[in-house]
Each structure stands twice: as structure tokens, then as C-alpha cells.
Amino acid sequence: MAPTKKASPKGLNELFHDTLKDIYFAEKKIVATLPKMAKAAQSPNLKAAFEKHREETKEHVARLEQVFEVIGKKPQGKTCAAIVGITDEGAEIMEEYKGTPALDAGLLAAAQAVEHYEISRYGTLKTWASELGLDEAVSLLNLTLGEEKATDEALTQLAEPAVNMAAENV
Image (tube, rainbow, N blue to C red):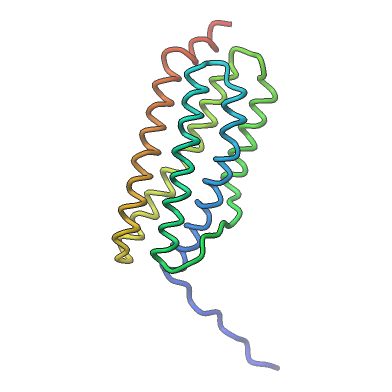
């Protein structure tokens, strides 16, 4: 019987790189999804928020490419099942609630699910980058983390007074 080869232990560097590939895939998927959400949105303010965030998300992709450079790796994505699931849910909402007062509330909820996922990922990556001594990566990830939190707050501001009330008053 041939001796079994022991897998080499993976460390935080590998986990950081894998998670970076995951969020890179997610951000590119979000760039492709936001125009559909903007088109579906009924509220002009919500349309504008989705369009603004698409431009920010393009910057997030560019920053992630800089983080790949910091760690000496080629920028590449790894299919992120979480973001695929979240964006599929958003597509379902767009289809099932098209033309209804609840559509924008559903779009906002889907967008915030995306933001919360991103906030979680960027927070984790920032912590790991710090532990790995990747100061430049920490700065880049922190900048994006702040923007994701601001977007989440902006979506909440849109949802509370107008969109959710419109959905309730049916």
C-alpha cells in the first residue's frame, strides 16, 4: 500500500487569499446586478441609490485588485455561493413583486442583505490583514468597509420613512 500523503496545513494567509477571491467574485456580481435593481426600482431615490452604489462598487473591485497586488497574487474570483443566493433572492423579488407597492421594500431588503454580507467579509478581511501585518491592505479594506456601512445606513434611511410606508398602505 502506498503511503498516504498528508495535506499541508493551511494558515491564515491562505484563508485570507481564499476570502479575498470570494469577495472579489461577489463585488463583480454586484456590479452586474445593480443596474437590474435600479431599472426595477419604482422610487427615483432608490434608483439613484443603486446607480451611485454601482459606481462605488466598481471602486471596491479596483481596491480589491490593489489588495491582491499587496499579497503578490493575481486578482481572481472564486464562486461565492452566499452572494449568488442573495442576488437570486433579489431577482425573485423583482419578478414576484413587479409593479406592486411592496417591490421597493423588497429591493431594499435584498440590497441590505448584500450590504450586511459585504460588511461581514470586509470586517473579517481587515482583521486578518492586520494580523498578517498587511498595513496597506488594512487601509484599503477599511475604506471599503466604511463605504459599505454608509450605503447600508443610506438604504435604511430610504426604507424607513417612504418605501416601507408605501408597501404598508395597500
